[in-house]
Image (cartoon, rainbow, N blue to C red; front, side, top):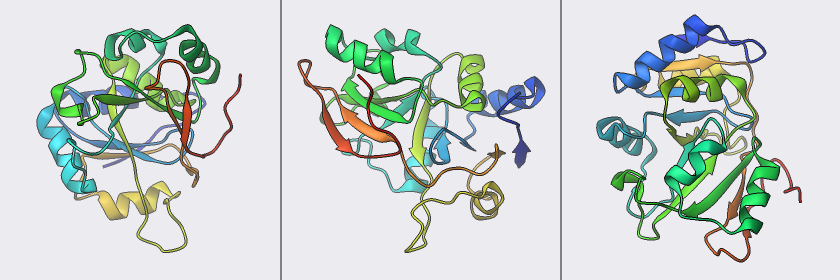
Length: 205
């Protein structure tokens, strides 16, 4: 199913359709402020397992990330952060960043790798943030990569739909996506941070 949603003014009816799919245990491909992502409700273990099979992810070894609507979810899913790290996150979100943080006990066990961390994203994209807001809890976030040797990420939602329509329950057409992923920042050391991957944007201070 290909669902067209305009980022400037997301249609509430279409948003509700996607939220229902997620609540029913479905998985969706959605736009962000960087590349297109693949996600599901973080509380649905079967949907999480489907995504891991599609992407070849080992949840015990690989870092997994979630998308939140805003920073109100931060204390729910992470351990207490230093003022320095919190200010850094607040300054740069919403935006094209993934912050790796120490996971709290509220994070579903499925997400906890051997390092007991969680990646946090709040994209600057009205579509996915409104979906997460209406769902009421975060969704899994993992990027859609391309098999092409030159292009790492597919930017055309119609081409994404052609490739994944038999693997997912819906693809959201929110316009052409980017081909540069998020900047990944490791904040598991409470005193300082480390750039793990340079992405679309530099951190602001």
